[in-house]
Image (cartoon, rainbow, N blue to C red):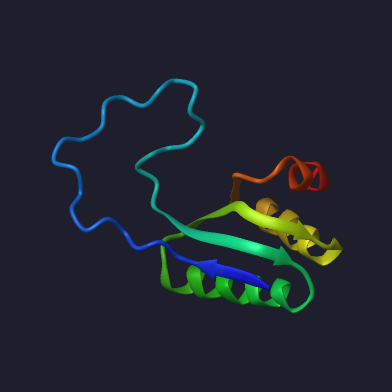
Length: 105
């Protein structure tokens, strides 16, 4: 089973803007991106569920997409292919385990 969630935005933004970001960051912190948090196994019907969640997030949210993969415990061939395609389309894959990172190469 795969659980997909979108974290709620913070209710109160910080009063002071953050200091200059570290120079080694490759991301623009002002960039508006949707975040999907995945948990569980990315297999079989859950791959289609991921595709549906990505389509919904893309249709109703900000233009960019980040996927938090820290909670993904396993991905089959279709799951890995879906993640590769999303990455190729500009999604950022974050927090992947060593196992998943190796599969995505």
